[in-house]
Amino acid sequence: MSAAPAIAVTGLTKSFGGRVVVDHVSLEVGQGRVCGFLGPNGSGKTTTLRMICGLLIPDSGSGTVLGLDLATSRGEIKRRIGYMTQRFGLFEDLTIRENLAFVADAYSLDNKHARVDAALDRLGLATRADQLAGKLSGGWKQRLALAACVLHEPQILLLDEPTAGVDPLARREFWDQIHVLAAEGVTVLVSTHYMDEAERCHDIAYIAYGVLLARGTAAEIVRDSGLAALTGEGPGADRLAPLLQQRPGVTMAAAFGPTLHIAGPDLAALRAAVKDVDPAIDWREAEPTLEDVFIHLMRSATDNSVGIAS
Image 1 (cartoon, one colour):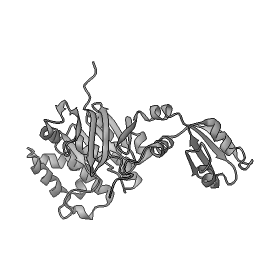
Image 2 (tube, one colour):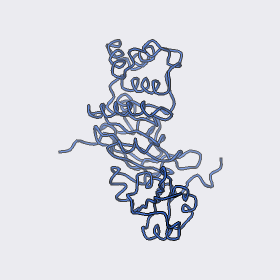
Image 3 (cartoon, helix red, strand yellow):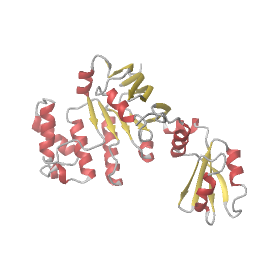
Image 4 (tube, helix red, strand yellow):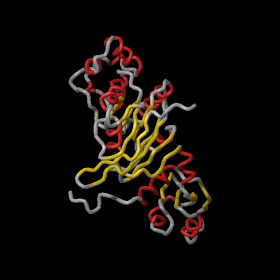
């Protein structure tokens, strides 16, 4: 018998200033799973995360987090969740060790010094323990923020665009840590704009303008998208993107080095779009990408901010 999901919410809705920011979102995340939460800026990702962790009260909807009722057990839910915000939220004029000690005190943790030492070792921070947080690079701040999130041994991690602005190596090392935590049973819901990060998740939820538009593994979402794609190779193929982007049936056109990748909902329309283009370009059918799917979903979604007074 399968275990109950760590997160199970139904119909979560939240409005601000007359605009529905999250519109009847339902989401389940299994225990020990890494779920990528994707969508354009302003799509409702952060608001959804804050409702799940008990920082915001939904206007409507219900659900459970770790079996606890979202409406009546918000305090207990907060204690069992680690939430990493978009912006670095620790004290820049304290050292790494002092920041972690402060977090331990905030949670009234026992064995504070041992816990802090363990977190420093786990995230590779021990050699920098006495360095001021404000002097750290983006990647090291990210490690410190994650160390602070896991210090109280949460069962769920909610990570809001945790790797924005850090270098590729730091991102890779961060994701290695995420999968280690998941292997230990921690459930992770992480928002990101990076397609390579989305593909490292066990499954994905895509939201645009408050509406959940796609759910499943990366392969399932691509398979179920109904999109087709072509790749063009030849002299100047990469320079044809602006032209082809305007043609019927082409959802997106993007250069990848000397080649051009185009995608849309109908293969015949794609072939028609490239028919009278330079005959020196060799076009062949290709697999649509996750990025193709998300751009298509975003462009076909209704912007619910139109008509709302600023």
